[in-house]
Length: 250
Image (cartoon, rainbow, N blue to C red; front, side, top):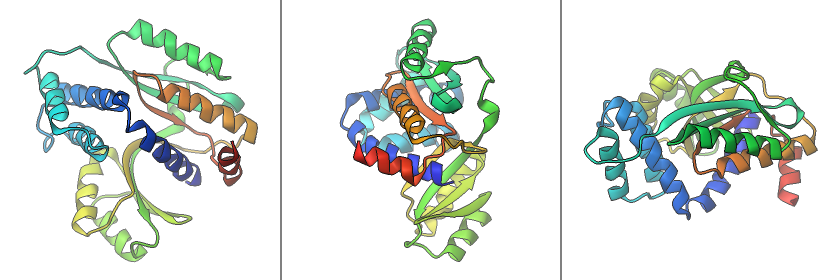
């Protein structure tokens, strides 16, 4: 699990910078719009919408922006029609990469994402190429010094979590996406502070690659995440201590 934890940390640092840009609010608005369109405007009844709103609040997205996005999704306000697409491909060293997109122009986005793969030692494949290498899971990151492991295990498992794993100085609470809301509520009620909470794609078997290939993969992921239409990027690269050290020196 260390690969996921390290990459989550790298993304979190990057996210602090991205939060200063309007681009992030635009991406979050799209996620809220499509969640509300597909499941209704009540976050208590629509887990996907609740999750999207929580992510927006975490980066201090204005309440008015959130409410407008919900209304666009439910049809109370006019807005663009966004389509959900998942692209699959490979990065350097044969690393599997999945890209979740919300776009108002499939053809444009398809061409631009393909170019990003090609310019960063990767190749976009067809649907189903790599999805089988991942499990969709809810993951909560908790500081290992902040909470007692036995208490965390009891709270999380009683709430429907699949597992609690120790990863260096963190605990990772893992659950089915359908249980994400109830696990989140249980942790909050037990005063367990989470450093990160997300529904993500976890690699079944993280792939070991050379440091050079690992750097190329993370560069590809950064380039993909920087695209306006891209919501999330996942890979099965094993982010080792050696790779993190190399990135810190860069």
